[in-house]
Each structure stands twice: as C-alpha cells, then as structure tokens.
Image (cartoon, rainbow, N blue to C red; front, side, top):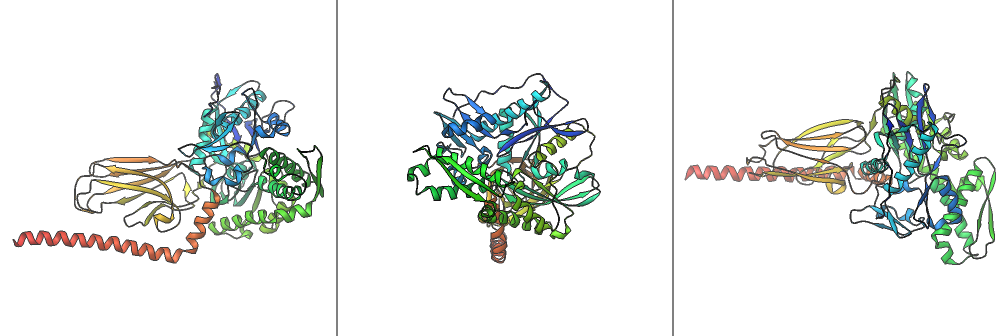
Length: 561
C-alpha cells in the first residue's frame, strides 16, 4: 500500500467549524458567517473541488480541477468517483471497476486498493486528499485561518462501514469530525425549513453517484426523518453511462474491439458523455465527440434531449420506486407532502424535474444551487454544534432492523427499521443448557425472521456466567446507535456484572441493491418466514422442556433410590 504523507493542521482555531460535502463528482466547503451559511471559495474560484485525482510520473497526486483537466491528456492515470468505493468490497463493485483505468485489488481484510504507477492506495487515503483540497480552499477564503473541526455529509443509505470509512478519511486528512450528517437532512437545513411551524417535506437528492429520498416531519423547528430510501449505486454517473453505451455500440464499426475495452479510452468516453449530458440540460440537442486513438479523427454523434430522455427514463423510474417505498414507510401519500426539495447536480436534468413535479403534484424547490445546498446545510449543523444560536434538532432513522440470533436460528429484533436515532433498546436473554458459562452473540441486520436470511454484522462472546440451571441467568443485551449511526452492542450478566461489547464495523458496505433485495424478500416471504420462525421457536421450546423433564426424572429417580 502506498502511504500518502498528509500534513496535520496546526494553529487551528477552536471556535468555528466547516461544513463539507464530500461528493462523488464535486466536493465543497461552507461555513456560517454573518448569520447565514456561505460557500467558501478563494477569490476568482467557484469553490468546487472536482472529486478527481491524477497520478503523475513524479510520484505526486494532483487533486481537483487540474486533475480533471489532466484526464483529457492522460486518462490512464486519473481516478473519478472514489466515493463509490468507500467501505465496499470488490465483489460489490464489478460495474464500477470496469470504468477504472487501473488495476483494482483487495486486501485480505476486504479493503479495495487502486494501483497507480507502482503504488497502491485505498479509497480512504484518496478521499483524504480530496478533503485536504477542500480544506485548503476554505482556509484560503478565510484569509489563512486554520479550521480543523468539520461536519461531513454522507448519503442517507451509507451504512456503518461507509460512514466509518468517511471518518477515517477525515482523520487521515488531520480533521476532527464533529458529526456525520445525512445529505438530505443537511439540505433541509440549507433551505431553512426549520423555520416552518410544521409540515411534511420530501428531499429528493440525485447526485453524481448516489440517490436518496428522505421524508421529513417538521414540528416547531424539530426535524424528524420519518423514512429514507435510495440507491448508493444510482446517480449522474449512470446517466453518463447510457451515452457511453451508445457511443461504444456505434464505435464498434469504427475502431478495434480492444480499443472499446481500453480503460483510458473509456475514461475519455465518460468525460464526453458528461459534457453532452450537461449541454442537454439547457439545449434541445448536443454532441458526443471524442478523438479516436487509432487515427486521431474526431468522432461526433448528435444526441437530442428526446433521445436522452428515452435512454434514461428507467433510471428516473428507479428513483420514483424509492420514493414510493419511502412514502409507504412513512405511511403517507404524495398529496400529504407540503414541500419538495431538489438536491444534487443531476436534478438539473429537465426530465427529472418534470417527473418529480408530476409524482408529488407540486413544483419542487430548486431556488438554491443544487450543488451547494448540502454543504450549506452542513455549515448550519456545524454552527449549531459549535454553540450557535439557531435552534435545530435533527433526528435520523435506521434503514433496516437490528437484532440478535436466538437459539434455533430465529431473530430477536431489538431496534426496528426506521427507528429514530440516536436510540437504544435493551432485551433480556438467558442460557439454553444447564451450567452454561458463556453465550455467543450474533448481531444481524434485516427484516427476515431467520438469521440465515439476514446480513451478519458481527459476533462476540460473553463469558464468566455462573453455572446454573438453564433459564436461570439473566443477561441484558443493549443496542445503542449514536448520532453518527455507529452501533454498539453490550451484553451484561446481572448477577456478576460480567460484560462484553462490540462496536459494529462490518468489513464491507451495504449497497442499496442489497437493501432493496432484503426488503423485497422480507415482503415476499413473510408467511413462510413466520412459519419457519414458529417452527424454530417450537423446536427450541420442546428441547428446553425435554431437558427439564430429563432433569426432573433424574432428580425423582435419585429420591426413589
């Protein structure tokens, strides 16, 4: 692994904090100043830091706008969309790896590595460089003032591993993370919706690489996330890929097959597709154009907005499917929504705005720059956490239920799906056999009734339980989710005070496709699951009764003797 030397920040001020949107396509810093959040950018600069990295032949890494420009000259040594790889394993990233212009491997611990110019880098290390670039831009805008405390936003569907990977990236960059905040929640703050007396709000966030929809309730300045849904694998990049696929299909008759599989050429196609997509947001037609490596000839292909809308209609429908699921979880209908907020650069696509307005039956808010609202909201939250006066309370929710595997393979759900966080819950457990001195705990996530059908998050063991008849020891198992969504599970035996705990940091992230599959299977197999659960519970109960009977007979036999 190629370790990157990062400068730890010194002489930092302690009474201010930055809000940072660490995005798939662009990243941005903001701060509360003169009673409102503002984007921080040096004079003459937009403040946007393209989430791009270029690896030079001198061993240095160029970050941001310059890296994006170098991609046109040397695409084979430029990386984009690193956020997609945060906290995820190689098996989940097949589609993404195909668009990476360098070898991608995985460590024994399941951490992805990019190999560039003989060195290997993790997504956390590369994200740290992007964060440092954003931080440097912000500090320049503040006249050289050093600020190390930050609030960083992540998609609502990022799981514990992905959130922890984001924290690790910030730590590598020398930053102190005050809070990890969901992007849709941050956006609602940027729009000042906390000033509304009450209402229901849908935040539709379609960014470069992720999609989230959150349904929020506002009561006297208190935000509560009623439900979230989304897709960590759907965003502007996927809209670009529809145009890349068109280009590859038509170029098949012009260039060698090996060219169409060349990662550097695919990078050029991706950039051409992105430019075409952006042009189509304002123009009725635009062009895909790229220089062919074999001849240097400029290949051009006209794309109309109507054609682009047809190519991407299925992607927009996927976002609406998530909207329907979120509405169902919140037990609301589209007519119950008072306001709709659009977030993310991809919401500039005219067809997206049209479909959203039709779905919710009202014109969505898009007054603020959709690329800036998340960073602005993060700045609001940073201001509050540093003792600011704006009175805001945020309450996020868990995307899936959390529980413990019980004897027989069933699941005891301890924290239910869509529970408001931070939260905690405690349930009692006991031993299954006589003189049992330890209990193995298996923590799972999901909606199915059997542990084998849920996602394993971790295992730990409580030892030192006094030998007693089965069912006598009392063990309290406490689940606690903090404000950053990190889960801690503690088991404590009441008589001795012996305890054990685990902080859940799964090796690989949970993709929205997996979440969607888990929910669909839970709905589809509900009857069979409950029958299987009942059978498992009956087997456990019968086993317990049989052992109790054997023990009773043994005691009675001894008395008769």
